[in-house]
Amino acid sequence: VLDGIDTSMTSRYIILTSMYTGARFGECLGLTWDCIDFENEQIHIEKGFDYLHTNKYTDGKTKNANRIIDVPRKLLDILDTLPRDSSSVFERVSNNGVNHSLTHALKRAKIDKMVTFHALRHTHASILLSQGVQLLTISRRLGHSDANITLKTYSHILDEMKISEAKKIKEILVHGTNTEQNL
Image (cartoon, rainbow, N blue to C red; front, side, top):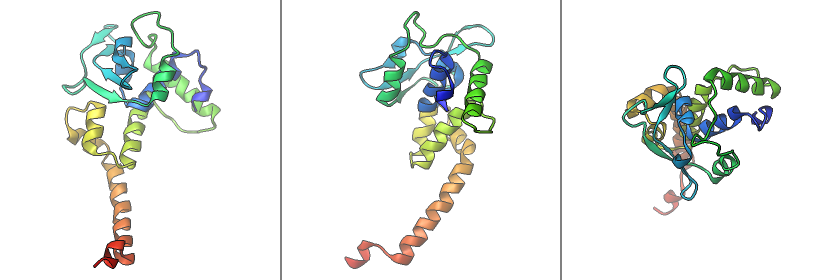
């Protein structure tokens, strides 16, 4: 999908960053180069950027908004190619502009689905949940003020996982395990 967004467009890199971190749009815009820890492969979310009203850096949305997110080297290598003309990692773009780029890229990939930037955050969390990452870990990664917010937001995925886990349990109980042979 990202191949549908020109490599010279800031939107491409903000989308990629959100996909790898689950960061909110304002948090991505709030990233400065000193927030990127290339050595330890981490991104420090310490502030946001209010692109709608004040056009200034802001404190995080919640008390847990300030956080450190482990990221793959691949993302850091991509970010390292960006120009460092200012302290900001990303040029100022609007959420609408990024959504437009995302919609255009999806159409080019022949994906007929409406996806907004915020959906990337949900996709990030959903992937982690489906891969067995603990809910509390995901909640902290997303900067939620409380794990209950994460639980409520992603309960549908947890319900799907519960069904899948129940099938696994039945399979184990019906077909046994190696431990039965050891008894």
